[in-house]
Image 1 (cartoon, rainbow, N blue to C red):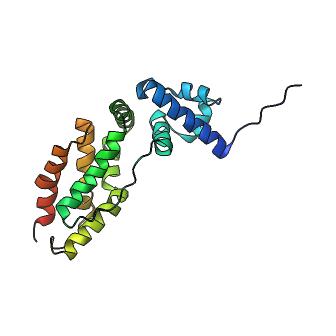
Image 2: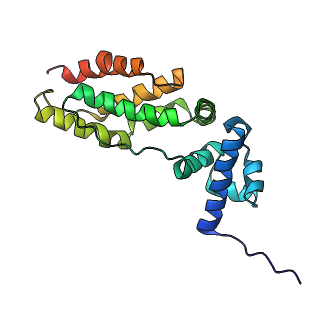
Image 3: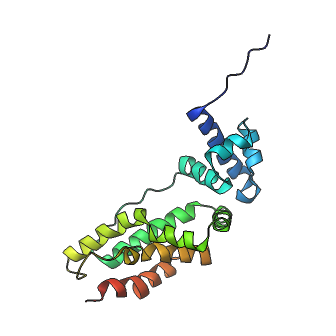
Length: 195
């Protein structure tokens, strides 16, 4: 009698799915990756995948997080607010550069297709992850006497995130020129303005 194959669960199953998603992404590119193909490669069903991830974009992001050697962000401490913002934007640009252009475009298209404008703006304005990076930069700039205060409304602190989202969506890139323009022409005039 053939030995019954043990059913995978939990971390084993998730690892098999993410491994299959990563391998499919590397072999086929984002546009040609399908939920069906990932399920087949992981020897499971589409239903199992959809229980964990609502769509292909979420699944690919999970695979990228696990296998993509993505950078972790740190609070810049360069000695000036301008350099701190440029350093932070440079960290974001490094992350985007690690995504192949086709993968980035596909992820953007898929995620935006399922996001209402209001939801997108709420995500940008509720950018607690970015705030944990920007607020210490503002605190340091206040301590250095560069800006008059560090207690800005959340919508001002999150402006850097909104600018990044706009640039990435509209240009599908984050060039060095765009980074300098966003910092010099928008962010610094706001934060350096005295009450």
